[in-house]
Image (cartoon, rainbow over all chains, first blue to last red; front, side, top):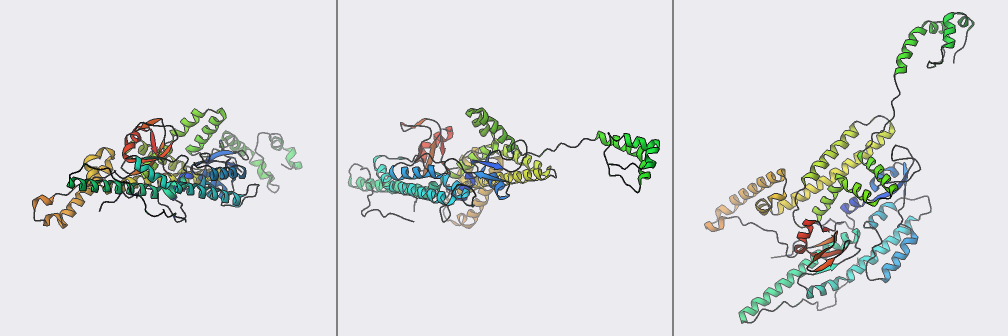
Length: 217
Length: 274
């Protein structure tokens, strides 16, 4: 039985869509931290410095500094992005690649300044849900694409890490299986046609006879 | 601080004791043993001279290499020179290791082994471990040492995951890789795959193949990986064309693997990895 190549190699996703590899890579992004100590040359008390997130988290857990939220992580920036996502068909490109993982890590702890971590977290969750839903709605469009070309390419501008982890393995597997089925119907039709002595026909696309069921989590 | 006792002032040595205090290190005067102290003056002077030659050690924290990188990066930021910043960021072997790792994890087939990355990351980890061992006693150095040890653990994780992914891919199609893709392997991987193939061959021969009646069936069929139905997410790094479709820098797309194999090797595209 020939099945499409299973994608064992894509990052393993947890129950809530998280992935250790994604979080690991997200921890390498640089954030600003204000240290409380001085260690020449780069750490001076009170002076903000760019360090990788894992270092910033280390300092924060030891109460040696505090992390400054990046620019995009503010209510003023995220609300318009949410509106934009809801109204426009394409995914926005103004959010960094690891926005979801970064938000989860940065909003975990209670903070004593103006920023509202809970509100930010809810906003980012909403943005994520809207983006995932938009991608899911484009799946039938991908199927339609496959009818026109032999080997299609699909544009996904602005996709981010969390959506990749959640939808990536399924999407690649589905496209592969679809190509396999298309190929097999073509060969079956060709075999049948040759037996009858006719010219070979191109395979008919497989159309779902019932409306596609929407998967909701 | 000293108390002048009337007897101390009168003796010559006592006067010397009073007036020669500028170059000394002060110790609390021992009132009960003042006479003893006066007697020990000369010995103290010798000791003091030796002590003056000793300089207080300048406190230097042992800095991990990437703090120096961070400093360079800050300087680059101040210059607002984006090219310098990019060059600095790309020089780190750790960054190159992470790139190679993310490509390897998300690629359907075994990619060529990058010997430079491997050697440089091993050296870097050894340097870091030495820095941790040599750290001094003060709390600042201890903090830097703990930061460096976290960095060592992260680098080791990436390295081990990279090698483990390669091993898993190798053992999926061992005979095909041993025969056709030996140039993608390192020396240790090559010797491992040869031993592995021998073991598998022996096992299958003893259990199954030798018992076949017909001679023609006794050959081991070699499984080849099939990428007809494999799609990948890719990101465009340099403007290129695929099937006469122009792609700009920064495009992301899902595409059939066979189309982009060559572009991946050239470096125009990169597999989009989470």
